[in-house]
Image 1: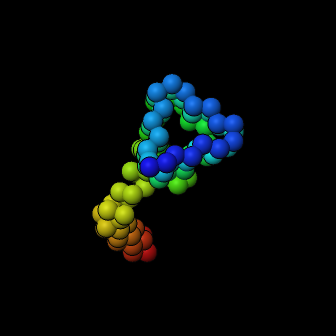
Image 2: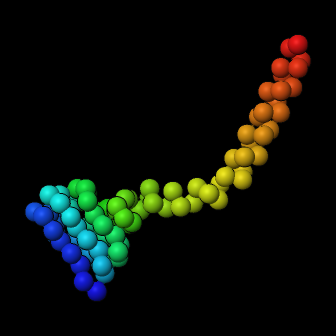
Length: 94
């Protein structure tokens, strides 16, 4: 698959660009950066990062965002319990 590099992008040593990845703009890509396939890199990246998505973000941020919906049910139960506790405290006060 093809990879596109535009602008005056500077790639460090050992940079790996997955298939159909793009690097766009006047950015610096540090040594050892890995860019996942079909990702679009539009900001400078420090060395040894793994970037995913469009626009590309760190692997940690990407995975955190995609796993958040799985935590919503647990958080909703905690909020309901806290609301019940608050209501009980308010009733006790009155």
